[in-house]
Length: 74
Image (tube, rainbow, N blue to C red; front, top):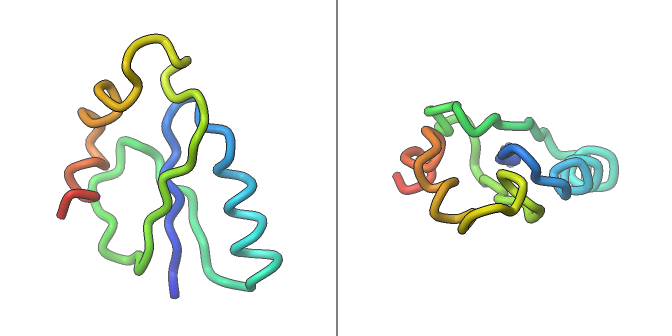
């Protein structure tokens, strides 16, 4: 199974997920920057927690306009 970990400005648990999937479970995993538009090579996409966008304004409302979210919806 191939994993993709979405990275938005300010997310912090992305490295924890990467470590566990790569070193503990031995699974192929890549970071996916929020400006990417194609997630087709991944079997599973992980949305890590954290203080995206500096936790200033409704983070989800801002993140939903990132290019990667169209691919997540598909």
